[in-house]
Image (cartoon, rainbow over all chains, first blue to last red; front, side, top):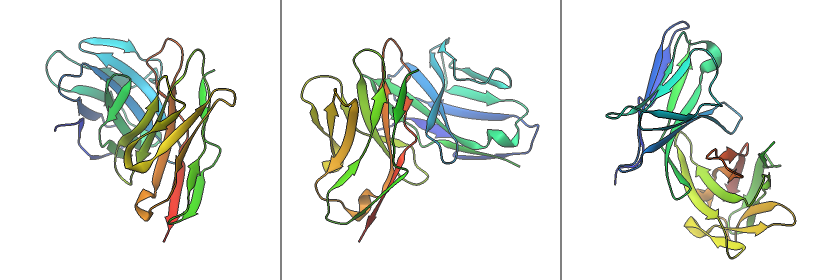
Length: 111
Length: 113
């Protein structure tokens, strides 16, 4: 029973480096969502993707952040030139019948 | 703007007592409402949902939630709390023509033995 998979689970980067977060949705799900969870806060929507298409990126910061969901392979959330404020837990979800199934998250720490 | 509010940062309850975690929403159209639970260092797990139908929705682990349209609330309840219920609980909603699931800020439930 393979649910949503994310890797790495923990990622440490120095300021200015790039972070790549991967997400494989539940088998058969073609919609992927990325959320960010900051300490003491709820989850904030970042981006909604279907295969090869960005459907809604209204929650993505305008600079340094990008996301893709290629025809083959996992969805990638990419953060360029990371800053300390990017430190957070990043969750990926896929959905079926309005229910979102979340992965275990990637905890990004920027030193 | 569409929003979900969880007015309590933390709820403390003794094991065996009933628990309630509060949630109110402000969304356009008919709301689709959800509760998720998050254990430490884990992702969110789906507990239950309200789409339509009976206002009292039953979910996983003995939890239930009551949809109240007039009060725009969707409080999570359980008749008898367990220590293992201690976790972070999130209320969430879709509203209008959107695929964005809007989350509350979460309520930490602490069940004391």
